[in-house]
Image (cartoon, rainbow, N blue to C red; front, side):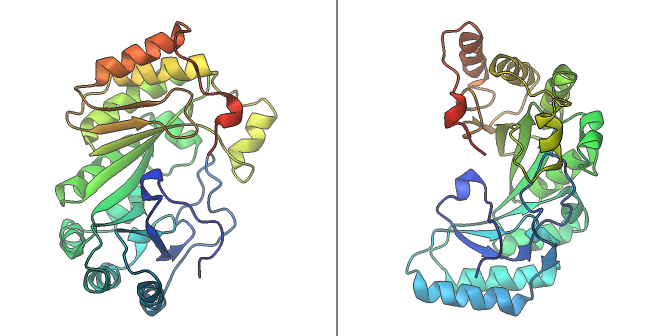
Length: 288
């Protein structure tokens, strides 16, 4: 039985979702309202396994599994390994198991822990960088510096786990958009994740930043400003082989490609949007 509002990455749309934890271990980020209705807790292993047993009876074929909520990696390594081992035995057809992770939950794992989880069947972790600017990370209460997030992301990648990193277009507002763009591109270049997902800031009513935006204290970027920021980030992004996606429902301009091969083509799409030759997604079609 799923508890509260459930969130998952876009690429996990068809996955079986089971909550390994409830809520988010941090839950202070001002831009995020995803888990504000929950108090963080780690579920007992037997509860998790019971849900998987029920799912096995209900679904004859499960290709992908996502361990919710916001930070399943906070589980003890031995407990998470038990869950992964059960998945491997009970769902032999499953090709990928994924979970959200935070800089802190990765930090709490040793390199040996991460390699163990990789060999047990943890295939992909989703990590929020949000911004490469420490000023902005502090303002939004991320509780980690860009260097710390980059370091932990590299550890995930070196353990053999696929790394998908999220950044948020517009998180620096109109005051720090250039700093946000340049430093985010530079941080991603150091981390070199397997996947990058670029969203546009759209806080919902549950997020602390929502009231600042509504009152006008935090001005959102216009579609033109958001496109210029993304373009500047791409110009400072060097991550050969990384799959780049900026085609979430929040984005004004849809981009997809593989770095560095498609970088210039994506920049050209943004140039065309800035010149009025590519239409921005209308506001009524955007969503979180």
